[in-house]
Amino acid sequence: MRAVDLITKKRDGGELSKQEIDDLVQGYTDGTIPDYQMSAMAMAIFFRGMTPDERANLTMAMVHSGDVVDLSPIAGVKVDKHSTGGVGDTTTLVLAPLVASIGVPVAKMSGRGLGHTGGTIDKLESVPGFHVELDNDQFIDLVNRNGLAVIGQSAHLTPADKKLYGLRDVTGTVNSIPLIASSIMSKKIASGADAIVLDVKIGDGAFMKSIEEARELAACMVDIGNRVGRRTIAILSDMSQPLGYAIGNALEVKEAIDTLRGNGPDDLTELCLTLGSHMTVLAGVAATQAQARTMLEQSIASGKALEKFKTFLSAQGGDASVVDEPSRLPTAAYQIEVQAKRSGYIAAIAAESVGVAAMMLGAGRVTKESQIDLSVGIILHKKIGQAVHEGEAIATIHANRAEIDDVREKIYESIVINDDVITSPNLLAGEIS
Image 1 (cartoon, rainbow, N blue to C red):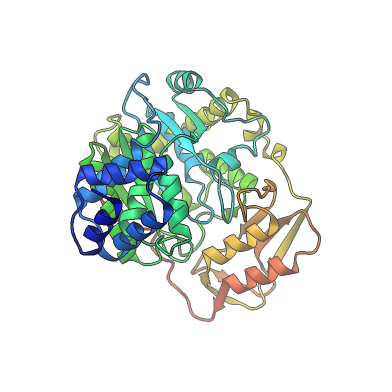
Image 2 (image 1 turned 135 degrees about the vertical axis):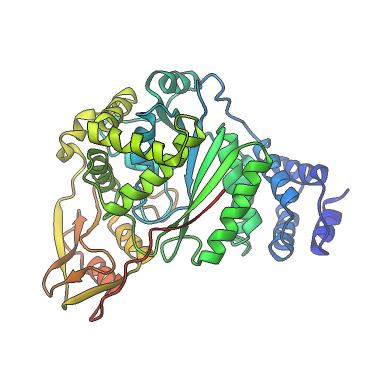
């Protein structure tokens, strides 16, 4: 069947068969189906949606458009975690060594960030010497020896998704639940995971702004995972304010170290324990959530999780002494307080806007070619619902330029102080399994 016939079929509300979807994805990947026809198909999907079978078939067609990582030489159930993004989202830096310390193998493929701050790899590269350039044999050997390794995503992983994502970005079809879900899940499945825990963010600093949108996306991804043989669950978590207090690469590494010591922010700690408990149960290392949580808490209290982080850094060339001496991490030249203009209670912290303020300092990338400054960022000192006094520091800017009036004003725009006490939003908003 011609591409135009498939476009017409979907435009009119028809269901595409597995073969039709395979042919469509293969043709687009190899260039026989041009951008303008795939744009039309994306728009048809945007308006008509896809059935559960179509979503699963689209996901697997994108998986098989490139390399599929074989993690079978690694002992145990490999559980991957994916976050739909946020501001101050330091969870992987804490979660990976935490669950690895109790016997859950973590073979993680991560990317670099394009946005407010760097991705997981950028953050880890704040540690002097740390590198992710490992071949497949080295990667598997490190996971088998230490229970943990992180590498960059292969350029040959899901090429169909890369092409389609770039097209959606310029054709107004980004916000399509079937296309978002198949994009995320294709990368997780191609990365070799046996099971997947999804952290779906909700709120100002998230891709999904409402609980209804987040729940729909989470349910769609969980359904895809389970249909193609990957045990998948999703946790809905709040991103109406930044997670933790640190926004910026080296600053987030410091916060992750604090959290692994047991001294981290309450919200970051709670989310990591929740996600980690699910990973532990899916891996078969614990029978129940309660048992898994106890194991994770004990690993933090005993220092075992922190030692695993040191082992992980050293194994990939990093200077593990930063764990005991965080001052060895990149440090900005200026630390400048932002003081409250009035007394009251924190009523809102616009996460996305605070993220933009960090990017203005150089903590994130505006384009793929942008160079990140690993030392800069923002440390918040308050959360929604907390009291604040006039003149008290509500944030500290870590900058490598003395003039930061633009960043200071952006923070003032982002943090609302009112007279009335505001209830802090619930961190966890539900679970879909």
